[in-house]
Amino acid sequence: QVQLVESGGGLVQAGGSLRLSCAASGLLFRSINAMGWYRQAPGKQRELVADIIDGGRINYADSVKGRFTISRDNAKTVYLQMNSLKPEDTAVYYCRVVSRWSNNYWGQGTQVTVSS
Image 1 (cartoon, one colour):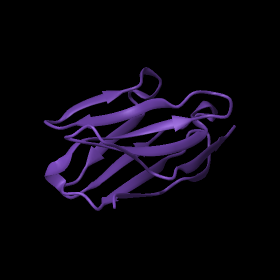
Image 2 (cartoon, helix red, strand yellow):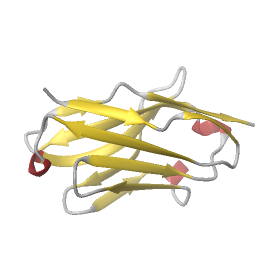
Image 3 (cartoon, helix red, strand yellow):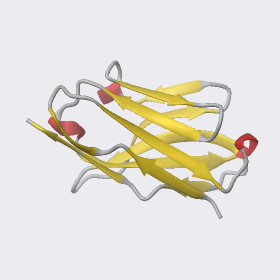
Image 4 (cartoon, one colour):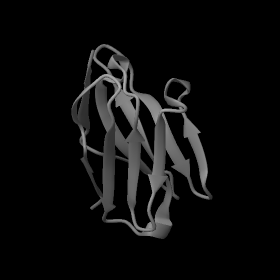
C-alpha cells in the first residue's frame, strides 16, 4: 500500500520561509516517474506548484519561480523549500507521486498559511 506522509506546513509571516517534506513508502524508488507538489486555496482549483520528472526535468508554476525550490533525495522523499512567502501562497499543499505505470498517489495535504 502506497503512503505519502507530508510535513512542514504551518503559519508564517509574509517574507518568511517554510520547507515541506513528503516521504513515500510502499513503492520502489525505481518505480517512481515523478514527484511533485500541488496546492489548493479555498474556492480555487488544485494547481501545480512544482514537480520533478524522472531524468531531472523540473517544472515550476510561474507564480513561484525564483522563490520556491523543489528537490528530491536518493530515497523517496521530495522537498519544497518556500522562500519569500506571500499571503497568496496560502493553501493546502499536496504531495503527488506518479508511478511508471501512470498510477497517481496523493498525500493527505498540509496547510500553509501566510499572514500579511
